[in-house]
Image 1 (cartoon, rainbow over the protein chains, first blue to last red):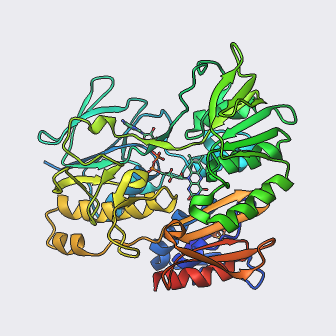
Image 2 (cartoon, protein in one colour; image 1 turned 180 degrees about the vertical axis):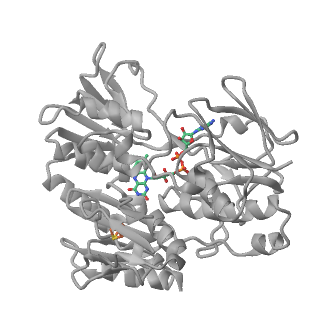
Image 3 (cartoon, chains in turn orange, red; image 1 turned 60 degrees about the vertical axis):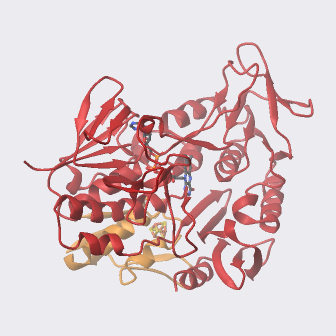
Length: 63
Length: 401
Ligand SMILES: Cc1cc2nc3c(=O)[nH]c(=O)nc-3n(C[C@H](O)[C@H](O)[C@H](O)COP(=O)(O)OP(=O)(O)OC[C@H]3O[C@@H](n4cnc5c(N)ncnc54)[C@H](O)[C@@H]3O)c2cc1C
Ligand code: SF4
């Protein structure tokens, strides 16, 4: 399992992560980020892409 | 013997290329040669939140992934030349590094004004961490008088950040409106209004011709003779490409480094050089999403997109992989994406709005949150939003379809 953490002090709700891993990240009706805290190892590559594209570098993956 | 890759430029583009080489199975030696003494860090915060707080490497450093733990870092010693025949890079200290694969990732540096009384202190640019540390020290909250030269995104961000710190800020630019090139007149004029409502003064359609002061800046002289009092001048006018180290090669370095769609560097007579690749701000490549005109794109997602592309093609090349030709032939068409934080505004854009011949407000209100669509003929080629993220994302989808 991969544990996903988003630093909500940094996150500006840009939503770029949503395109890389829509099953993990989404914007709610108020355009605020919501995400699931854990994901299967098979999702690693997409989640790493989400980490890469986050303008605020707010996402981290805990092993 | 196992193969080796040398990456010149230890910043975002170089780092992403190194990660992607490892992710694509390249197990040979990777050496990163960097002019700066720092491990790779993220530049955008340097004109925004970090400049307003405390500028440290820790605040902006990229997390180094396990894949790149065994990379050799050769920092604080820039490359000065390369021999593409012998495949060897030489650095300022006289060291040489042989390679089988070379990644050109040396980026840009700010252009500075050439001024008669230019050799006085108080002049700043914002490209590197050290630049931002130096500037931060002079942005005395509530006291400093700041002139920002250049009204592009970086200039406007610095202006907003300095205003946020309570400095007196004047933005001087030869353009008629701030950020007009990417955004078009209507939105640019609106953003000027918003900056003015936060207290930034603009001197547009003007250049800077000199400085007053003996040891330190006391004022900035405009091309009409007007003098603006200043303690600090931030120059964000444009950039030079860091290609001097490629001068002895036959690569096309007329504007960045020309690259083919596999991001292999191209010579002045139009030939792709095997084993030599370009990433990031320097890469001038055609993007079939728009047309076949090679362009450099100075947006933050491009180092990542180009780094990943190079990692996959170069690792296949070095492994003599059967799918190399197929990879080279795959279209490369990353969607440029950019954002900018100014005051409480979140500006976010996709595509190439600067290429549009027409734009139109497609959602929201000009004076509030909004989405602007940019068209070439009937085709949407760019979208820019202030807030309204979900709406912006709908148009983003249209751009890639
Ligand atoms: C202040 C600032 C704010 C920004 N804000 C945004 C933003 O909000 N949104 C956005 O989309 N983009 C933004 N950008 C642009 C984005 O940061 C760049 O597109 C990105 O940094 C480019 O990465 P790069 O790796 O290609 O080049 P660079 O990051 O410029 O890295 C090149 C590296 O190579 C080194 N180098 C140069 N010459 C040599 C040599 N001869 N030998 C060895 N090393 C060498 C340099 O010292 C540098 O470390 C901003 C840029 C700046 C400076
Ligand atoms: S990309 Fe980053 S800033 Fe944007 S919503 Fe995702 S975590 Fe937040």
